[in-house]
Structure formats: C-alpha cells, structure tokens
Length: 357
Image (cartoon, rainbow, N blue to C red; front, side):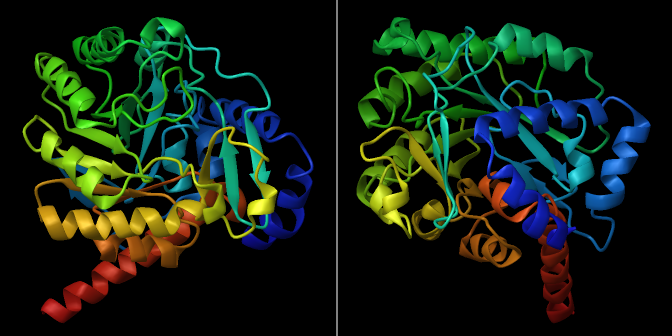
C-alpha cells in the first residue's frame, strides 16, 4: 500500500487542487464510515491489529497514540471511520460559535520538496450547533476518542477581547451541555483569523481561562499552543495555564516562519497562512523537551508538528510527548503511516517492558 500511494496515487493527487482532494477524501471517508462493510474494507488495509499500542492519558484510553489533528475533519464527517485507519482519536474542528466560511481561496498550497502545506483555511466550519447535531446522529466507534477543538469565530465581530472570550465560552458551554466530545482543546493560536493570535499573550489568555473556568466541565481540557514564540514567552503562557483547570497542551500549531522550510522558494512571496508538516518538526520537538523539563508531569503533552514517519513519532515521545497528532504526514507519506507508527510504538513499549523485567 505504501508503494501504491507514493508511486502511483500521490503523483496523481498532487496534480489536483489540494482543497478539492481534501473534500473528495472527506466525502469518500464519510461514505465508507456509514456501513459495516465500508468500515471493514478500510480496516482490512489500514487498521493496526498487532501488539499493544494502547495508551491511557488523563483517564481516556486510546487504542493508538495517534490522533488526527484539528484542521482536517473540521466538520466531524470522518468521526466514524478514522479508527479503521489506526487513529486512536480525532480532534474535530476547530469549531466556532457561528458558521465560518473561511478565508478567500486559494486556502491550501503544497510545498512538495519541503513536505509542507501552506494553510490559510481561516477556521472554515459549519458552526458549533450544526456539528453538535451531526455528531449526535453518528454512531461512535467503540474505543475511539472524539476530541473537539474550539476557536473563536473568524469575523469582525470577535476582534475585541470581550467578544472573543464570549465566543469561545459559548462553544465550550454548548459542547459540555450536550456532552459531545471526550476532551476539549482551546485553540488560542490560529494565525489566520481577524485580529490574529489575540490570546497568545498573558494579559489576553488569563481572562479567557477565567471565563472558561466558570463552565461546568468534567473532561480534559487542552490548549493548542503557538510554536513561534521564544521559550520565555511560551513559558509565561504555561505559567498562566498552571493556575487554571487545564490538563495539558498541544505543541503546537502552524509555523509562521517560511524560512524554516527546506525550500523556502516554494512558499508564497508574502505571508498568507501558516505552514504545517516537516517545517514544524524542530520547533515543536524542542518546545516539548523544554516544557517537559520545566514542568515535569504537570501538563499532558500532545506532540503535533512534523510527524512524517514512525521515527519522527518516536522522537516526539522520547522528547516528552504523551500522545501524537498529525495531518501532513498522512498526506505526504500515505494513509498507511498511522499503522506503521502504532507498530513502532508497540515495539517500543514491548522493549521498555522487557528492560523493566
């Protein structure tokens, strides 16, 4: 399957508009996820059934430590098929209080030599109420984890601090009221919205967390962190989160530094969206190491950014990550990747167990 994807299917797909390809895959995945036969077909190719790769984090057991990161299944259409591809969970969204149409096209661009994507979606999604109703009607696969990423609606109405906080809090409140999702992520660091990353400073983050603290929630809460801040400023945000009801952090979001790409000439001539993929690898791993060193086990760490191979996955785990998230690795290297990562993690856990014995 790896050879088929990389030598035949990927070259063909990469001739097409990336957003069109994404939409086709979402439609196909949604179709296969609706029936037992469809699920069985996908599972026969991509589901990991080998040694133990499960991991329990914050009271939730993941059959695989790999979670589909927010930004791919932003409307919750794939939540009943992804377990068949060796994902242990999905982070749906980012979801906003109101429907968001997204930024003007083009919203995706491939940087093929750099193994990166220019992402300019602008939080396109159907809005929290529509997504709640969709997930209510969907059969949740046994043992599969649904996380929900929450962001502020991408329009001029949420530019002010007060309006932005109200927007976040409304979505968070509604998801908890309807008991949708096994965990929640607060996306404070999306760079492609009105007002920019307005909640990535202590004076903005603190009142947001104070508002969210007032909402009844029994589930783990994670914060999606930026990766372009110096460590001192990043750590200042962690110090704020330490004072609130936060289980952990996702490290991290898109990279805004185009010069970090292996081939910067592939990027747009001026800034138009953040970069995902290999270009995030070094920054995210270093921040994971520093967070683990500084805070120990205070924060669950979910490693996201540049997981392009099983070796990259193990590197993130050894740096201090408890779970993994990816999107670009699947796009550039194929849907077999999650199965290969699960195999590598199972082997790592087996070796660790044998050493302890």
